[in-house]
Length: 365
Image (cartoon, rainbow, N blue to C red; front, side, top):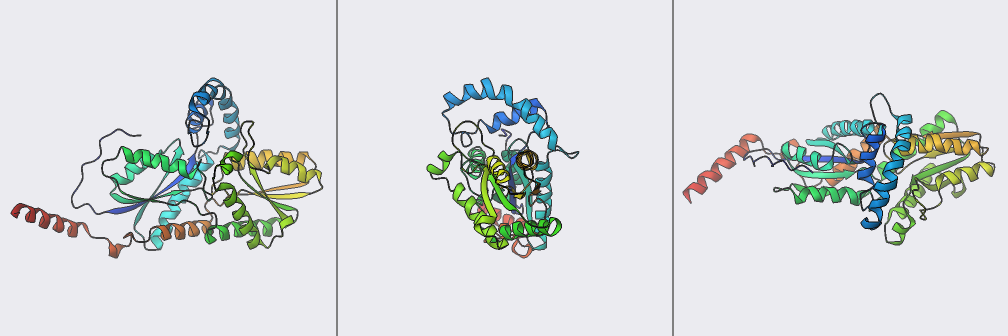
């Protein structure tokens, strides 16, 4: 969190509206030192690991951060591109495209992005928007399904920034969009496009990021929202219950997680005679380590190694125009009531005259 003094309040500054897209985050490089910093921040979040700090801290620093960074760095290296982390690349593209779509829709807003872990940090991005004149900011966590470990964690960081900020902007945030028609339509079009290019057959596996089972028992809606996304997507695709399956990936530790697990499901499908699977990850809007390495590489090896014949990974929505249009419409809904169109915004000259009148009136009083 930045401790730099805030810019002085400027009379006559045109108030602007900002939109901040927030994704999970990525290490700076596919190296052990970079992963150690990234995992240290990620796994220190009490929303992510709900274990008492006194018990968890020695495990994290004494074991995990000594062993896991090197292994994770090798996985990141396998998906790293010449432009850097895929997650960063796609999030930056989504930011630029959303700026354009909102502009075409008539909205004059600032669109920026941040990462919950790593850079650009949420606090820095909010301060930068504020310095650009944003007096209203819509925070958009890029997590379709709500979880305390994701969306709520983003807002924890927003509120932490707010505690250190003297002149707060108006703040809104989007909690979820797991059943948003535009998002679901974009997913369905992505699957149909894949089928047109590769044919159909086998089973569609919808793999979502896993969460400890305990989160469901404590009231987290994530599991239910993943199932609803899966059901609504299947309906759009005209799939019967035996033509698709919803699974959960990315287990960590020995505790019970949401089931069924993705990799064991792929093993079981292959052994039961399913020759082809198409795997999509509707909980991610950008391809990243969890989709490109864990599913497209490890998942493929699991299925083919157990006797399966054909494995297809369907990429995330990334910069697909259907998705970007849907995101623009979703953001527009949550901007309602804020003056974001040119005709609604006062000019700098108007604000200057208002300031001068206010100062003159104050002097007479």
